[in-house]
Length: 331
Ligand SMILES: NC(=O)c1ccc[n+]([C@@H]2O[C@H](COP(=O)([O-])OP(=O)(O)OC[C@H]3O[C@@H](n4cnc5c(N)ncnc54)[C@H](OP(=O)(O)O)[C@@H]3O)[C@@H](O)[C@H]2O)c1
Image 1: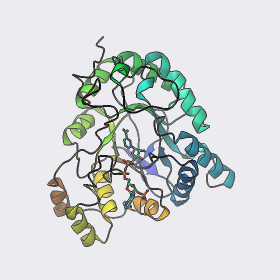
Image 2 (image 1 turned 45 degrees about the vertical axis):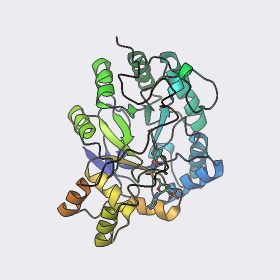
Image 3 (image 1 turned 180 degrees about the vertical axis):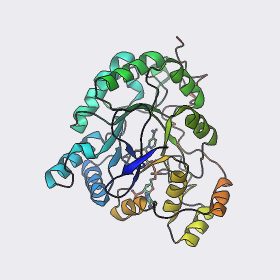
Image 4 (image 1 turned 45 degrees about the horizontal axis):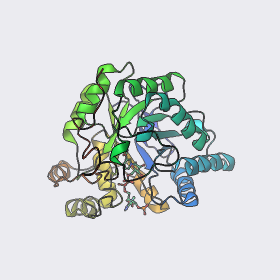
């Protein structure tokens, strides 16, 4: 990991291997929240900018591109930012858009939503392809909507987005090592980032080692265990192991989780709409865990939370993200 400087809140940054834009701050604010309340998202992003966030994560799926764009426009009006250049903004191509001829128009729609000339990072949200559908994504995915994913065609269209300067860097999300094998085999511009579920209760050791070997930077979503996505509680915020470490360090459980992720060289994409918690989530850079803390964390039972049940179900075309099932088109 190459650290190249700091943001307003002294957040370390990483230079992305194949990006031609600015370095990525190693903590970003997540904006996925359901249902989406435009004003709530806009106000939270404004609060985040005020406390020092300069990295924002959205997606066509979330419906938060517009409120994020409105917040940035308002921050510029208020003088909280001098220019949009100060921000690192990520968005994602949804599964009904993973068709070679839909990538560029989808990014243009995203840019219109964001009121921006470019995104800093554009990701393929899932290694899944659904029949094109106008309007907002619908759930659950129906069996008849699933179609083969043309990885090579879609990735070349992503490369074109970067060549045109509309995406400063391009990458993937929810890709396993086997999906990455397929992209890396055909890529002229390798993915700069793989954004995946990662936290002390889902540590992704194999994937991290694979990505480190190949220069793909890893970003962690649901770093605090997510928003009860599987209805089974929170394996991170409710962890007794993390709570004990937090008490000993005089930190919160959330800070211990984020600090552990940071120490793995991984970028945290963390969602909070609360000013105090937003602030807290940036205060992880001037202290460290001990070897004993790290050992205890390495023994935390592992549990994946994001099952994407709207995409994968026993009744649907895909029961899991296993590439053997995803019907990826080979060249
Ligand atoms: N690529 C993908 O497929 C994918 C999938 C899921 C998520 N994501 C991205 O990753 C982002 C983060 O993941 P996530 O939204 O699943 O969940 P998360 O960041 O792990 O956790 C968010 C939850 O923790 C709470 N929280 C935040 N800071 C806290 C603190 N300091 N102390 C206690 N609680 C705290 C938040 O509530 P409050 O708002 O009340 O603080 C929220 O309910 C998303 O918003 C999205 O941008 C990407």
